[in-house]
Amino acid sequence: MSDTKIDTVVLGEKILRVIKTIYDPEIPVDIYELGLIYDVFVNEDLEVKILMTLTTPNCPVAETLPLEVEEKVKSINEVKNAEVEITFDPPWSQELMSEEARLELGML
Image (cartoon, rainbow, N blue to C red; front, side, top):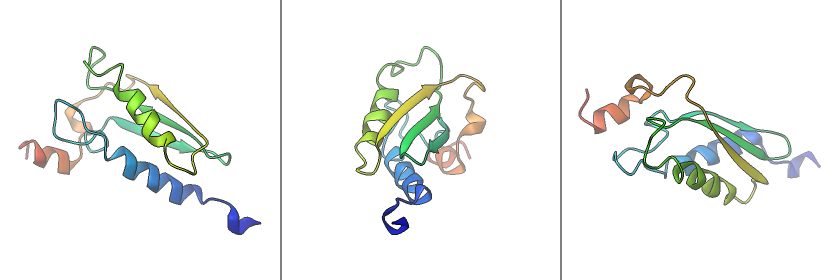
């Protein structure tokens, strides 16, 4: 029976690969490298909770970006449900960006 159980670590990696296909429309960097994803939780029931932020509370994609993340993660076959929670604690700052993102934006 345990052979058919989905490995949550493998699923977590699959979720990150999907998240890395989602780009901020104003910046040519994916939202993971941009530092907008704070955490991804996968429970034993294969339900996913994503804790993310936006560059600002008044971000023009505040309504659509979290929905896009939720829908794309839900589209993964193994995922039973996905929920995105937005937080501004801590607030996003450029220090949260990966080195790759800084390089892409000419900040290094």
